[in-house]
Image (cartoon, rainbow, N blue to C red; front, side, top):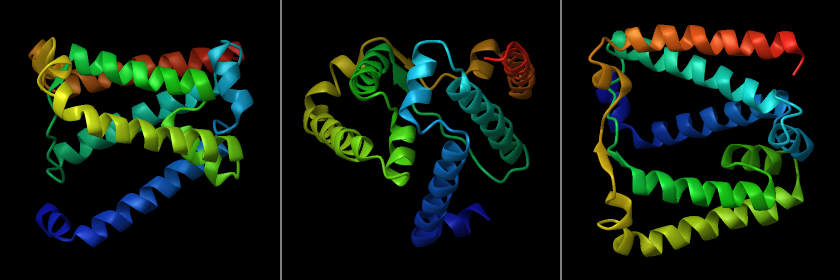
Length: 185
């Protein structure tokens, strides 16, 4: 199954596009493509964004590991580093602070017809990606490698079966979601 999908690049693109459209639709239905909702999250007044993202984490985490357990997918974690994480966090944070959208909500807001997301968000993401690509050669072996921690995962770090991390983490996230919902936030 994997080999036939891997060989069909056009089908991969179509599946990626369809998945993105469904994700954008769900972001829109969850109300997290609205600037006021995102601002409410940043002000700790409206936790809709957190609830949608935690729900996505739970579904994605369980889904990916279930597919892996069934042998339908193979995971290839990429190596990471403190330097790359800090640079990525700064770029993400700067864009979020200036415009009030993250990359996913920018795309959803553009789909809703929000001109600020189109002009500022999409333009900013393209400029940021272009600058990073232009500077990558210089950053690759210096800043981006600082504090290299390899392709470690929590199950490998803890030396447990993946489900030994997935199930307790899922339970904790569901409890957080229930507590947020019960509190009315």
